[in-house]
Length: 299
Image 1: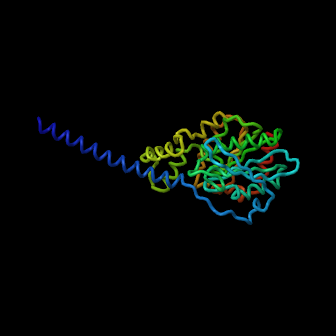
Image 2 (image 1 turned 45 degrees about the horizontal axis):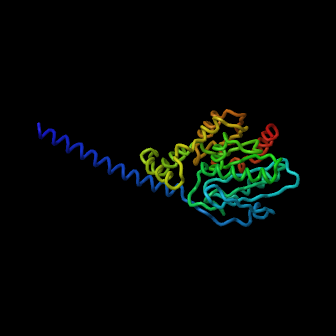
Image 3 (image 1 turned 60 degrees about the horizontal axis):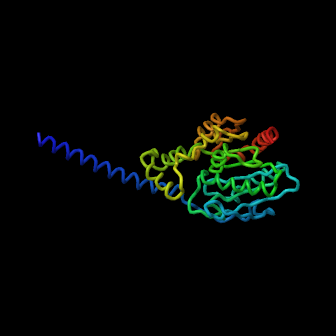
């Protein structure tokens, strides 16, 4: 009887030891995933782009965390509204130049383009993934509303910027009238899970503890908090959703899930055989016409 107990005890200890080794390896792998996914990557500005060649004004503000953020304002005489254009992952304001040019030339609007934290000229050691950025965008919206008290605001976000817009759907923001998201993701967990599967052929969940531990330590929130579905489920603004039907960065299903969850007035526009953030390029005329109709209806 004693031999049986000894074997059982040794077996339990061995299983526990193996489990701890596996757990530790998964935790470390999760930390490495965090390092790759949340690292910043700033690039040189293309001085030939439309925005750089435009008469823009540079604005700066210090956010609640003490980071110095930079944004760019392109004025227009007697505009009907301001388009706030929010860039994507590892992008910056100047890399949204094609969108800025298209909106400026087709609508009677002025423009504001922020560099999100950790991007462009804005400070930040880690990518905000939209969740932290939503607080910064709210600060910019407050500033714009103080500069132009009667000016309506339309928020447009591309990719991670679309995620930022989704997170803002249930927030009270002065002068904001419409939200437009192009290829924005639904929840941070789902997006990281998708990217993890592409990179490792494995789901996120074995590495979740390690990734989330780093997000809590360096970014101050938990992955589960960044939930765009929850936000659009209580949306306070009309929303236009623009998925890429062949999207290999943000699965198309995410945008359909967001659209179906959204409780405000909403519309979806998509272009056949279009990948991530390529709808404007692939179908410029229809993209602008759809946006013009949506703006006319809801502004």
